[in-house]
Image (cartoon, rainbow, N blue to C red; front, top):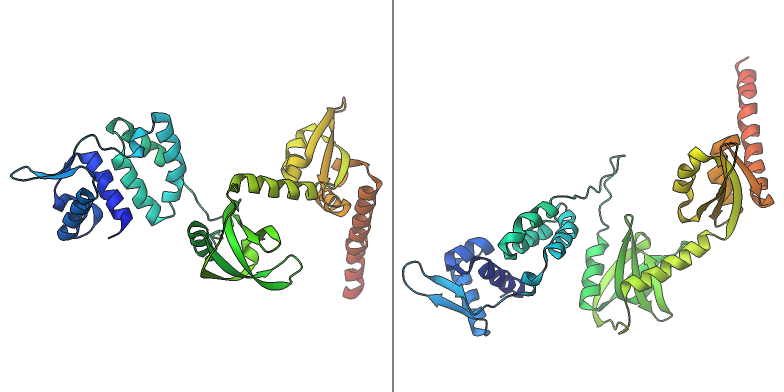
Length: 324
């Protein structure tokens, strides 16, 4: 007998007040005999569920027994269903759970909850037509995190060096469709890019987790390290003020407008890991961006410009010679 089915039965009873075994069977998609056994199990467990014999009878939840779900405020309910709703558009299990949650709510909250659940959807197919589906290994990793079991990973690092290691999975993070596993290893806490996991094998070995571990805090620390690496080189540039938002799209947090000049341009500070990274991004702007400093970025732009001139200015002449 599944615990989640008993919880669903309890929620349904809370919503309806009185149900027959046949009604519960239809709701849970089980046989009438199974539904009757579930109701008897709830009663045996000490939950005030009692049969009411005779015409118009059934099973009733009496004595004011409630679940935590009924203690939600209207605003909390809306926030919950705004979060759960998008998952229901891509997961059959989430859709079923959402339907059961709605039925367990107080009547006055139900309409707003259903509206919130349908207010947002998730479309994982990009405009290119590529489906950005979750990696297959995510389900295995999620189960290992929940049940606290070690996972054996075959992993390629950034240098494409392959290793096999036994890790303690502590949490998963989905950042803009890129997944990361935060795990404990012999060398301490580590972060693994899921796309670099070549193979993963779940084990029955318990995976301890520090009592003070918090996934959100651990991820903030990871982001802090990454952002510091991404801002090792700073440059000061001049650009038309109207284009500053576009430049901010390119450099994100590492783009700061220092001042607006009288000629319609703005002085902006931008950052990236290396001078070459900055130059590669700015090269497509041509003369619309003027790099004031450092010299290293100016030199990289000059190098890129020289390479382009050598390849594309000489190309028409070479083609003309070949055609004669």
